[in-house]
Length: 357
Image (cartoon, rainbow, N blue to C red; front, side, top):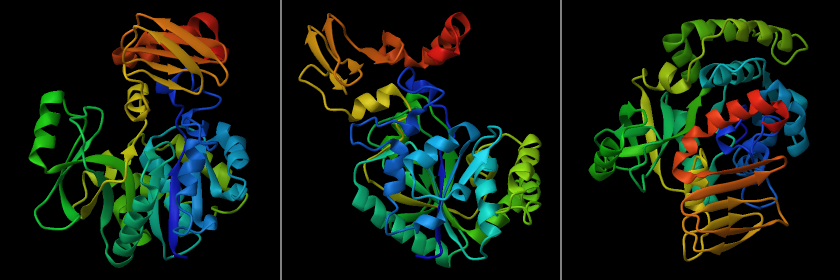
């Protein structure tokens, strides 16, 4: 276990959960489910007994340093890696990988987002133990594929290759398909959701960066003498200024030939949208879900109501709406048109100011 490491990506601004998620306090720092722990804290908690606390790194935006250390006091400040600019997941992961490389020459690394929900946590931990054992002894890139429960168009898909067992060679990656294609994928039994969780050993991921993203590899390899020193911050500021903006999926996983997928089912949701939160929430007989506060619903169906604790809403004749209040903002919009949220946020900022976003 001492060679197991974890990189938690926690730099997103969570605009798709506005107004509950704000720029100053994005969704990964919020207690969505009323458990007393934020999504980031719940993510951290899952690795107890699998990854030593001193081997867990959080990669995030400079603006969230104090929030991270407040929510995870178990971490030392040097375990919080601060990105000066947003450059997508490939530079984010490369920064952490090369920082780990400066510390050790033997590491088995798990990469996870900070804002996913997992309901079967013991099953998840058992899957991770199997995955760590695999990457410790194989020079393969491993991703976790979730068994699809519906023809979801908001997720990427992984097609598995021939063979038996839960660990299979990846045949293809497909980004968010249309509904017709998603139905074909689910019916075929050959496709799994791409969870965005990855595992690999240190040597394998360094070789993958050198092969598929050589400029990013060279940029972060040049910091070998600066990582874990006072000069790291200045080096990273210069490195990010020249870094390509690219995801690990496009940059490495879809190009590599040594990619495997562990097929699993541990109650996963990426909590990417209000709709995904509605799907997993408890509902009344009319399909209404109310979180944190309380509501009285008269002739209402299939609504999601999110209120501050202690508040109530009285709703009449609403069908398929999102009603969300937080701080100085109340949002009422059609639940199946939440893709317009980013435009709403932009309009609010332009007309009323940043204090509302």
